[in-house]
Length: 172
Image (cartoon, helix red, strand yellow):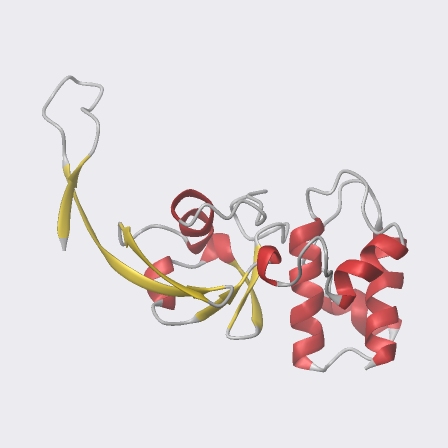
């Protein structure tokens, strides 16, 4: 473990040492070793240390799904898990699903079905939908709605989201 100094406390005392250590994450096919405090969430590791800002910080309590990423192919709320718990895991963020020149089938379906308005929830919606596809459990609209219910859209683009996910599910 290495030591990093934090800023001086408000009381004007001496800086407090914080222990950090290496965490090796396989993010979007690339291995990164990040020096992280043990309490760093996976969300903060991705955004602040790996500089992948596609994953959004919404509620920071696991209630909105904006931070959904794939870990070893399964969807999780990255705000609810510590990065150190995923040492050597394969992590896929929205940046790893496609490129602007070559969208993933889900990304293309979201465009085709106008499944976004402001776009803030879209990365989490798409990662959650990809996890749903990986799980192979959704076959009907009712199942898709239930399995996507942890991802909120404040703009109300649910009809387009459902249509986009259903299109890709039906093609599988």
